[in-house]
Length: 173
Image: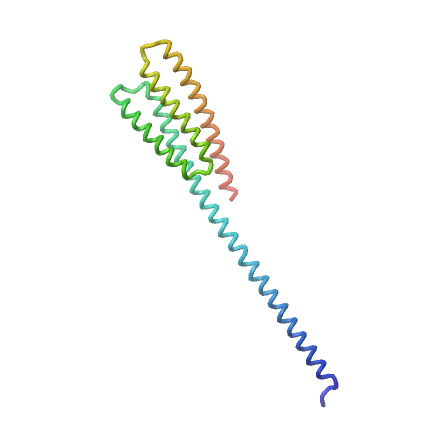
C-alpha cells in the first residue's frame, strides 16, 4: 500500500536533501576559509617578525660600531703620533661599515645624519691636532668639536630612543 502523496513526499525529500547538501557545503567552505586565512596572515606576521628581528640585529651592530668609533675619536688626541694614522684608518673603515649597514635599515636618513655628524666630529678632531700650534685655531676648533660632540651625543640619545622603540615593537610582536 503506497501513500497517495508519495510523489510529493519524494519531491520534498529531494528538496530537503539538496538544501542539506548546500548547507553542509557552505559550512565546510566557511570552516576551510576560517582556518586557511589565519594561516596566511600568520605567515605574513612571521615574515614581518623575521624582518624586524633582522633589522634589530643590524641596529645593534650599528650601535656597537658607532660606540667603538666614537671612543676611538675621543682618544685620538691623546694617542701616540705613530698610531694616529692607524687610528684614522680604523675610524674611516668603521664609517664605511656604518654606511653599508644603513642600506638595510628602514630609517636610513636618520642613520646617515648620525654618520655625517660622526665624520664632522672626526674631521674637527683631526683639524685640532693639525693646528696644535695656534691658540686661536685651537679655541675655534675646540668649540666646533664641542658642538659636534653635543650634536653627536644628542643624535646618539635619539638613536638609543629609536633602538628602544624598535625593541619594544619587537617585543610586542
